[in-house]
Image (cartoon, rainbow, N blue to C red; front, top):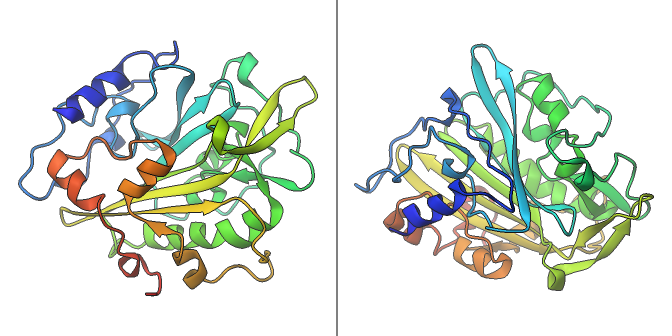
Length: 305
């Protein structure tokens, strides 16, 4: 029953803003549920809230948007996000690697940064830099969306940006992103890899704010996280990552090795406790309870220890 309740929350207004609800072919799962459980009560062909990668959505103070591209005859989801109206920063960004989206057809476009056209003007922060020492750090990375030029362009929207310390963005977080991209594009590893990324925006989990010229201010997360769920031949596996936003002594010339990044692995249950976000609520309860309790990092290509 808890999956039905969660989805009903997602079907109502999120902070006064209706969720986008277009039924498209890419929303249909390309895998079978394992463990003998039944599918969630709301079909995955529904809206953003019904998609497997979408976390539970807050009932106030946020706005949920989704970006899509036309790929052939299909409308394909680039990513969805939940934007915090007060902190002017995404609470999470969610997407998937599957048979359509894992393909590499283009390279990073380096498109100009731009405001998210799906956000109302009052929530737009402008495309300019966050200023030293922060990068405009992609949440859904440019290299996560290489199946079309338009999808890659959408990763440069400012709603998908976070004020990240340059060395953290280019020398630490990038190692985890690279491993996820490698696994997501490996069809022998996963039929579908579901990804949720973000930085913490609760008032007790920020480092401060970056001021904009129009008086707006953007929260600087104190922590960053990823929640990963893969399915292969009907079997689900999940893992989480949680890391403090600080200088670690690495940079783009000498990025952190996988063994170091692996020390940040946690179970999804633990990540939910740390973030206050309910990840993968659309899994059948028995599957969710099982896969979220452990973090087997060697199964995700990280060294033991």
